[in-house]
Image (cartoon, rainbow, N blue to C red):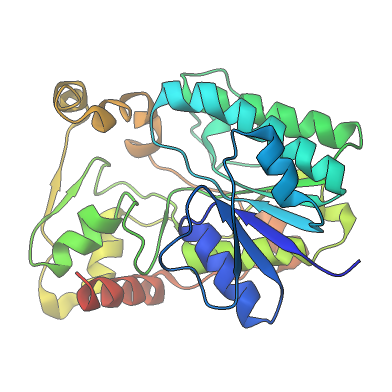
Amino acid sequence: MSERIVILGYGPVGKATAEALVAAGRPVCVAQRQRPADLVAGADFAPCDALDAAAVRRVLAGATQVVLAIGLPYFGKVWRSSWPVIMANVLAGCGAARARLVFVDNLYMYGPQTTPLREDMPLTDFGVKPAVRAAITRQWQEASRTGEVRVAALRAPDFFGPRVGLSHIGDVGFGALAKGKAATLIMAPDIPHAFAYVPDFARAVVALLDAGDDAFGQAWHVPCAPARTPREILQMGFGAEAGPVKISAIPGWLLPILGLFVPALAEFREMRFLLARRYEVDGAKFAARFGAYFTPLDVAARETAKSFRASP
């Protein structure tokens, strides 16, 4: 069977993965509800609503591998109602096509932790969004255990990168500073926090797509540079010659109040455990198998700042 890779979702990681695969001359089909205006030249497109089981099965027919890179609006009730359905539909579609699945995942399913996150940590029932991620993890784990689908989950912390606006240090960080304004963060600016650089995330996706079946049936953490503070990362981007970066941090107690006017902000209240304490990720497992590659933070930060300066 000839290779056919379907990428469900065209957010930052889906797009970067599509660009990497197309650049390598590999056949890629991007599938989501609407055709993206910036679809990479050389990629095909197929309309698909991931909540529609028949549509998912149809678009995955003939696929050899699938990348699930969908991002949902950041509301717990949306995640709770939609993610289990999406996961069930994608697992069924992959099973019918006998396609392998790489799930672009986050780290919420571990819940509050005080040590670097490892793949063998137990799943949590904490909160809404973390509990949802744990529940859909159990879905793919069961499908993998029974042999229904070969699944590999690729997990990463908060990410950033060139032109990535929806990030804790994206539009509100690099974007604001590029416009000469102060960054406005909902995370503590002076506590070390691991970030994944989107191009590195995409490289890790491709590494799993190219791996043997023995890499599936398990989770992997994307390699990240050592944790630094958001202030340090933003300063790296704009350089010492620009002077100290200006940052305004929103205190956690204010989020519920601001959420009355900006509902999305209220959604971060249960996720303060990610943002108000040291946050590190152990990527040793991936490094041992695929190599400990990651872009140095100073290089990643400069490239990100450069992109926001070019298109503020």
